[in-house]
Length: 296
Image 1 (cartoon, rainbow, N blue to C red):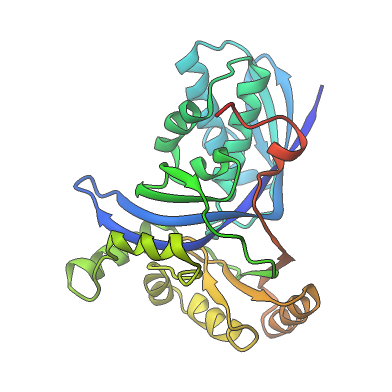
Image 2: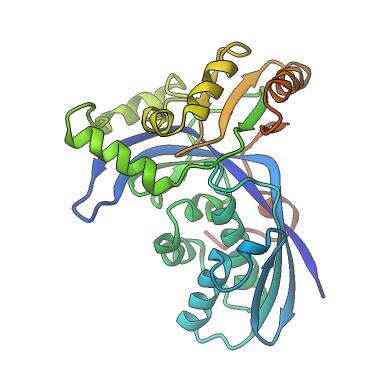
């Protein structure tokens, strides 16, 4: 039997870098919400593990979904397989976590279909080495990460903005590793300082940090397209920021009509832009429509 499951995009509501570890990893103070743009995974049982994708270059064993599920089978002694086909709608290297979301949906499905029934925290611990964004999708609800690389998650403490959401991807991606390397260079050369971890008190108390992103400066220096896109978006909205390490930028509007009008104007200026008008979601769609996220 084939099932079709969603893998939603995420946005970072804020992103602060609070420490650089000796191993080069970055400790973050960040928060996540889901959006209603989703990849879809067609999944059916199979004797072996197979992963294909509507973007052919993402098919096969190099795909994060394959790597994660193959390791999961080995870790828990599972001999069954799955055939997964990923229908991509979320752009790549966009700061929206598309690949991580695909991996999280696949892991939740495999955990259920294979009867492994591992609890949520165990899945998060297992998946974190494969990608720091995977935990926020496994968590199943809008979340706040503090004191780790993104795996130490708590419920997001503030109401999500009830406004129309415009996502704009400038037609090119940014590699997370390159953005962090540029950020690290700025830190080591004294061009900027790390955000103090005490900033979390402000985030817990109110939403003044909505849209603050410590990586935005590095992304803009690496990509004139991102810098120009943020500038253009600020002509249409007072609330504009970049998600993750880029390159997707976000703008909030009072209603869908305003958001669509801005989207159309931007695409007239640059037809290579990918845009989406929707809303922030506080719950992962798997938790609402299919089966509960692994028991907490």
